[in-house]
Image: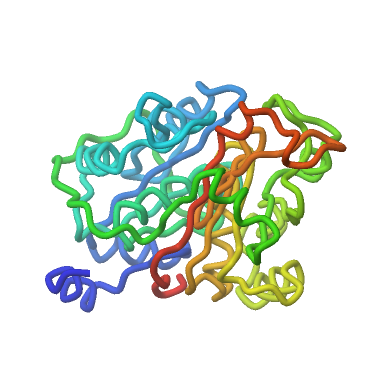
Length: 327
């Protein structure tokens, strides 16, 4: 981080993983430079996200559409799949249009168990912006604490510039992930158990999972009240899942690069995310390190029998630098 930014955040401690309702409330009361983004959505019913935002959101929040604002297109040439990455330059431009510069603490949330907002969390890390955190418990926790909410469109804010910095995360292609199979990395599949087992597949053309992948649905990171589990509990659960494997070698994967990221975030919260790792996604399971992605395989067939369409769809990402302060 450049000296000017270091100096700024020495007097304004940044939140880089989770932020509590109390912490956010204090930042807002002190008039700190904070921008809030509501990433609520529904991949099966895209208009629903904006409807939810217009009905109720945190005061001052802006809406980020997971498919319209946080995804690119195959034409961008970065990667394929249902939810391709947008170019970093486009992300930075969009954030600047919504009042985010390099001195802004960004807070993201959604109403879907931190599934979609983690995408924006990762994209900002990819742009080199560390000061971004997920609101623990989201809108429900904010309301439960007795805080007011707003409705209707977002308020306009002055545009500014978010300058790109060195990426704090990285991504791998499906081909790179495939080449790593059996050579050390552990793939963690964030999809629901029935999709992992190939018992059902509502979205992708191929059912099943990447050979050797271990299943941890992203919802397991949360308590019944919607808050993330304590760091010590998350650490214990992930270490049990890895069974002695190096956390730095984890590849997080899902169906299209969305829901693998909450597992990456949870490992950061647990103190297991300091070393590089790669998430994966399956575009038919996507694979990514530090993000999400990968390609699933047909039930009863090994990777060599997977369709070329599935083989071209995934990507993996990794954490390039250590995370900052938890919470």
